[in-house]
Length: 182
Image 1 (cartoon, rainbow, N blue to C red):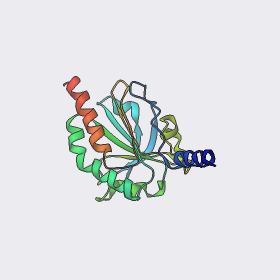
Image 2 (image 1 turned 135 degrees about the horizontal axis):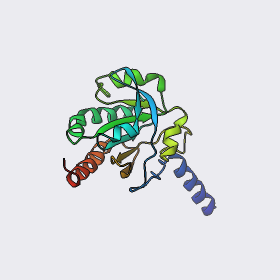
Image 3 (image 1 turned 45 degrees about the vertical axis):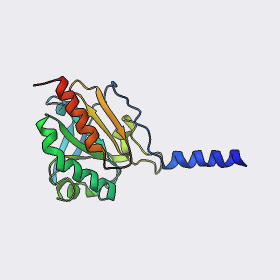
Image 4 (image 1 turned 135 degrees about the vertical axis):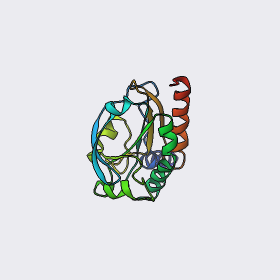
């Protein structure tokens, strides 16, 4: 009976725990293009092009207009000037509530038009980054990556709590900038 309970507990933990960021530091980030919005205006985000101007903070979030994702977007919007001062680009990407991304990108309590958010139907890009929740299927995990201009991942941070992604990514960008001045 104890073995059955332990197996059930392990299975439940896997179902509700975030997937581990399988792309580790030093891995090459897969390039992609994705449709999205900034300030409610449509755009196409191209990772390879964005990397030409500096490091890219790519953060996956489960769904627009949900409590954790609202907080995370607001925190990134509040810190965007610090990222820009370091030459970094920030992009949020989700597979959830895609019909709400235009509004989410423009609303002052979320992105405030300060950075783009991209649509990831069926979590295709999240799958490339191994950033998909095990349950429910097809939903982006809350995972943040910092990608150097050459394409190497310099930070992979996966945590369903939204409140530390900005500080983790900003610290990684600062460390990268200190090692690559100018």
